Length: 476
Image 1 (cartoon, rainbow, N blue to C red):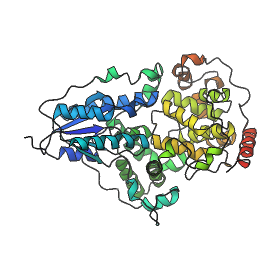
Image 2: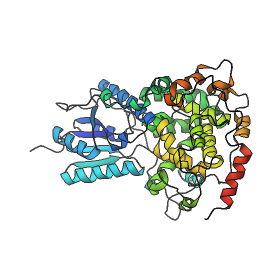
Image 3: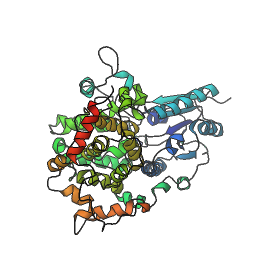
Image 4: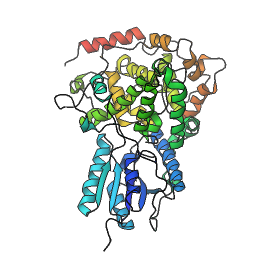
């Protein structure tokens, strides 16, 4: 009879594609048992948008190489999570399947099904922390509920200790024999990107080593001025770590530790940056406590608001294509197609313009971002959109309508951001702006020689008036 304490552990990897500060991996490597890392192209991966799926594949490839250096392998399988893991358990004789917890509704649904099914089979199924700083059930209000407003949430956790980081294993214990693995390239995870993949590729910073260097460079050179520089899209004022945190190429706890050290060293922008890490936790906590956050109005009375829900309208198409005539909006949208990311100030402006000036449901924008962003995160993306729309927790009031014209004067006064991304505004546009036309779908039939709109799709004043009029007439 096989000793269950000697059977292999299947380490099911999802959005935790790193070796350092990985609680599940660290404990598995110390258990005295073989460890078989596995990535499953399951229903969650299959449902991901074009850009996230392409970027996910790049992360998987990077981790596979890192595991080879530790005397291990990354086994790849495709199929729904439970039957695929069950098959691997049978093939390998594994006595346990371990993974890192995720908190959005779909990820939890899949994991709960896996846990129930494996335990029914007599296989140990165990989840670990590591995706957020603090587990959602550990942060409570004085009355015992969850926080719906960020500021008191921040005050609660600001001085907490999320625990020490886990060491990187020197070696990952290998089994006597390895199960068969799919080939990553045969999955075609980047196929939906078509020609856009080659455009985005130089702008992606992939893998654990690159993420670590990125954090170090930001702490050395960027965090000091972060509080002000983060709002200026024409310069490199942010850490850029959102894509790495999305796939778990760096741990949120490592970022927290670096930020706290910078605070102790007196670097002015450090506390603001640490606060942004906590915003990420806040979004995931809300997704855990109120699963509707990612798919429906968090404030359910907003279901009665008269948003347009037809993504086929010309106004929505022009917004997607970056030809609204509002230069801040259009520059941000084009940045996304070229780099797979968008500056946070730009995200607020394009979201406000779609939901308020164009009176279009936030879900349309949220879904579009989910297809186009390489740093797409289900909780953060939905939280940001609902914040801008006014329907979410701790949201900006609906009557606060960002004016894209005054915003661009305040945050891009010298026009650097607009010049970088809108080719039609320059006689000699830079490569960044021209790359937009290589990244977009061919059927859009756009060319750098096209005329830029003379007038905004919806002028700032008219959009504000229309939005406020609808808000005042609301039925809730």
